[in-house]
Length: 130
Image 1 (cartoon, rainbow, N blue to C red):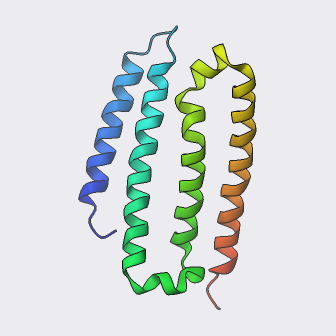
Image 2: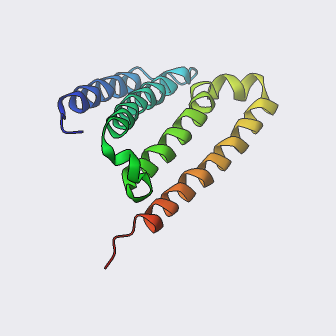
C-alpha cells in the first residue's frame, strides 16, 4: 500500500502492547504472552485484508497468477487465521484440554506446510522471464 501511516500506527501500537505484556509478565499466567500474539495477528490480518481489497479494486486481480503478493498474502492469512486460536488459547488448552491442544498442534504443522507450499508456488509461478 502506498500509505504507510496505517502501518506505522499499527506497528507502534503492537510494540507498545508487546513491551507492556513482557514488562508485566507473571510466571504463572501465560495469557499475557498470548495477548501480544493475538493483537499482532489481528493487526496483520487487517493489513492483509486492505491489501486484498486494493488488489480486487484494481486490474491486478486479472493477473493474480503473476502477482507474488497475492500468494504471499493468501499464505500468511491462512496461516494466521488458522493458528490464532492455537496461540490465543495455548495456556488454557495445555492445562485443561490436552487432546484439543494436540489437535491444534497438528493443525499448526499442516498450516505451516500450506504456508510454505504457497510461498514456493508463488516464487515459481511469478518467476520473471529472463
